[in-house]
Length: 327
Image (cartoon, rainbow, N blue to C red; front, side, top):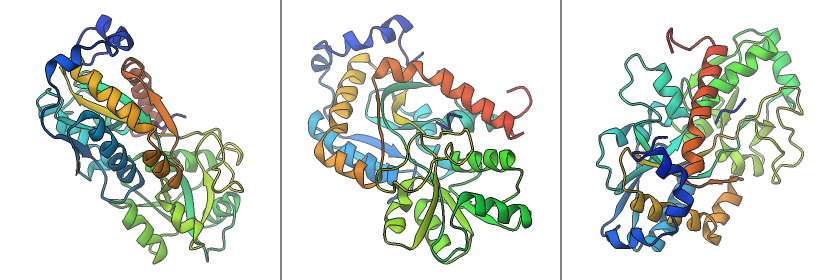
């Protein structure tokens, strides 16, 4: 399960992007000649927010203009990309793009954007390492123990996520179906709220990206399982879902997108700046802090991956019985 062409110019131009990106055409446009806005669809302090701020700072240094982060939390992290629908395609408004944008479109009664045709896909950067945490004083030391308690108490155990239909919520629904258990979902608006909720025992567990890493490291939370394809180097004793008997891998890749119809030269400038910023030592330090993987894709590959990403989201919604009729 992966709980992860049109970019405003022709498919031929898209597939030729690796060559086009190497040309000096971008320099002739004068782009950028003013600051660029990067819409971050998470509250300040979330692991993705910290990473995107770091990579934006380094990209701005390479572009010669600041890339200014602007938080747009809410709607399970889709407000940033949704705002691109009405933005000018001049390269001065960009946003994080991830598979949840496809999911939101599939769930909407009246979608106000097409999650493939209405965007220019610039570069894929990273992803998120998710996991399930309980309070350090919890009686559950393994995922098996947690699920055994859920079977004995249907619907009584609660878990927090970043909201209904978020990747965390969708994965927990999938795991509950596979295990034959029932939990009660409690949505929150951000990673900080999730941390507070578990510390204060408002919920029995949280399912979130690696913003919990510092709290696990200092002994206040217990990490039961991670959702990636491999164990985390920082917590090598914690098993993956596959090692725990569930054939599920969640890496949630994400990158940067802009509005439909961007100038390929501006796309090239942004791609190169963010690609190089990804490997800057200061960015790598943030990635190591939150155990974020390097999942770089160039413009053509990032765009070409979107139909499969959308199909995976449709399949996940169908498994959970959430896919609206006709989608």
